[in-house]
Image (cartoon, rainbow, N blue to C red; front, side, top):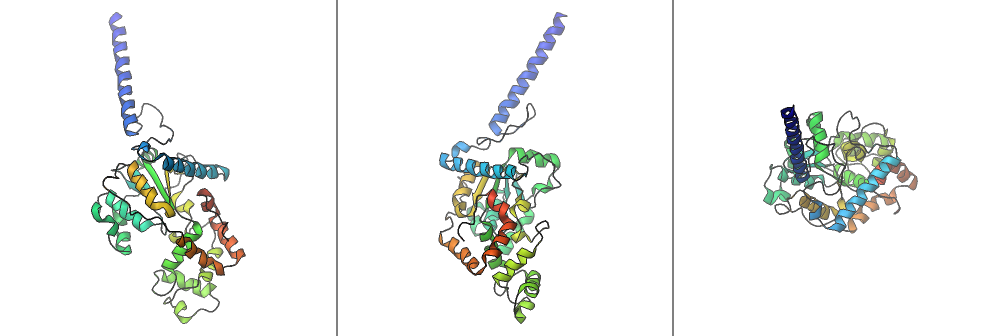
Length: 326
């Protein structure tokens, strides 16, 4: 009997020591390894939030807290473990650096993908910011794994343990960028949609508009967007943040804004321990860029602006963008 008790204490001690070792490993790596429930999201779980300036860390905390408050107030879930039918299409994974980034069209996605290609070893780190034209950058997406490609267990594990980053900009500024890049002037790349807009929404379409050789007016583009059913999918270039990145389901740790992307993404590189190897091109958006996109809306009626705002109001509220300028 005495021998049995000694054996029981020995086994108990071994199990306790094993769990203690696993706990210490988890504290060092930020990974839950099975002896407890996953830890709540706090701002020292990843490589080290202590490596970044306190003022920037506190700004991230404010942005995330604001986003999650809006999610709760609008009845959207903030529980990342809730049921899904699938993961958003723009979530790219870098397993080597334990990073998930949502890279959306018209939100600095070209440079964002260049950075991801460098981090994942698909392009030279020394010259990644000069890599390829826009078309070549897009073609390299096939080398980036998406979160949707992982098993349910693998996706959940990464969501719980990786640094998650989203880049956003004012929704109406993004619309202007999409219009200028895809539908304005000659040589625009979205011919079919341009022809449809010309036929349906241009008051006096030119022959060039009707054949896709010329772009459409910004007013026609806005009229087209206002005609869309918000419950159906849009073209990715003017789709909502909710559908592309699911911010009310994905617990984003870093919310980078396009106007401060140089600062925000370089701080992200510090968090994953890559700031000594990579530097995101500095140069946040100048104040003049705001005047450029707002100029496009000077010819749009207030009623049309209010209508288009309804399509993107939740995106704006989530990331604290407003209409106070018009």
